[in-house]
Length: 402
Image (cartoon, rainbow, N blue to C red; front, top):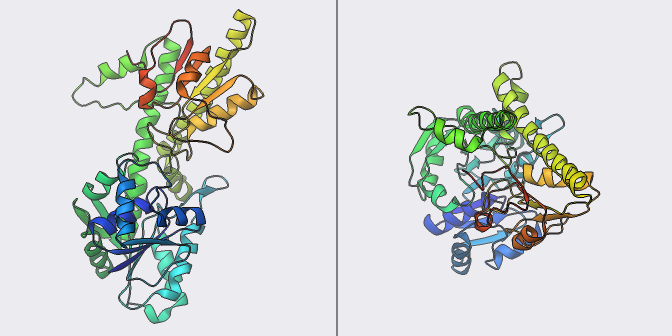
């Protein structure tokens, strides 16, 4: 079997590698970025993801995976491209459509076409209509399905293999064909449904997480005003057998939880009040954290009669990864720098070597030099740094839980 994965990002590339390694499938990975294609063909990982680099080298050397800038004739095609939002948080499926159009000339009887990209309800049917409008000869002769990914960055290998998958075809035969493919490398259960339910399932999972995080973030702001240690409070409340409050942070980021709820609120604005409110709370938490940093800087300057050196610790949207997509930490660092004319601000992100906007500083050096230390992302390396009473420490991610 030959498979073509369109999109070699944080999900597409690991999935392609796993399919080649564990499924024994001949894989072509497609990306419009020539640098990504070149690195992949050299067996070099262009993302940070534990354990996947060695596996990439192995499947490239074995000839099981190669990268290209355009799709090639295959038996199965997988769309794993970004689905951002545009103006007023409206879903943008233009990348999914472009990927679909690129394979329409290659499709043949018996082929499988699967969308993995997070998509608004009805997208799979919409792409199905597009395919058949261009290739009416394929009507009833190919299989089209939707199967959302369920992975945690930093643990992608295990989760791609062991997590359950929800697979929904445009018809029963399409569902069966997609289940047959994923069974090559997924050890978790494969749950059959229709494409609309599968699309909504992905959006529901991440919207649920967003609502739960919003509760924790709102609680953290209440506790700050009340003079209560929110970390201690949550630990105590979670001793209740039916309570499981999540951990607050400086907002919510990433390509899923910070984006997917908008796919629901855009289509069902009158029915999604709680989901919309959660998005507002989590976005506000970033603005609240920014103001806390600015106020700490102003108090320091008034008390010490000099400008403080401020260390912004972390840019990634979650610990121990290099993914900055929709990151509240990055947004806060940018806002603070702009308000202070980029003066006396040290930006730290140990998981990337360089950034085209920020000049990065080693976390140990930044901590030593800083008067104000702002923890935005809970990277493991930060936890080796001790609490120091001679510094103003703003801990938005629970580095120093007590």
